[in-house]
Image (cartoon, rainbow, N blue to C red; front, side, top):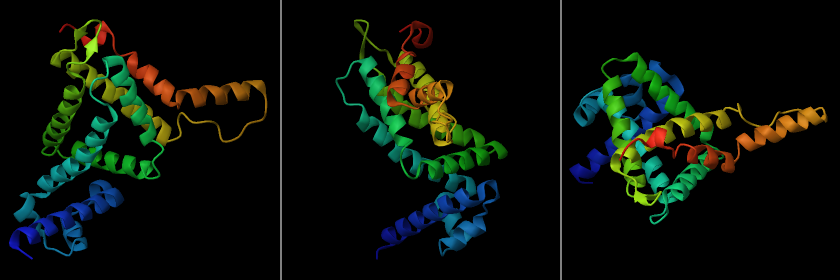
Length: 222
């Protein structure tokens, strides 16, 4: 094994270990525990990532990269803005049905909790998320809408609004906040409530809610 291969192996081992420890322990995750589980020393963390926060930012990037790649692939080039937004929202809804969706949500919340508790980590965390959000801006910029191409400025405003909406709706589905009731008494009211819950948890609702953001008040001037 070359030195470069050994370095990459250790880097991967630390990232995998950090993800497991952070998912399990949240803000109580320690550098020592992460390194021990990876079969390495804390010195390896400093050598490869510079600090614990450097490791956590690399962990965030390692997690967000594939997530945004999947989103980009779900929205083919050539679609108009409304169709692109609908495809984007429908893909977000399908992610809620992943068997690991609850585990992913727990991990995301643990990372956010770490950033909230550490003033030094918070701005780096925000900068990393914003950097990935630029990929959403690029995904929508230039698409046809009302006889014109969406400007980068408008695409950025739309991407921010979409992320806020779809993250909130997705968390509701994963946590069971907008899911059919577990028990029904057979009454018409109960059936209606179930129908409403199923509607709010559907791909169509996600798509319709997302497309509602394609409005002048959200997009702003070009």
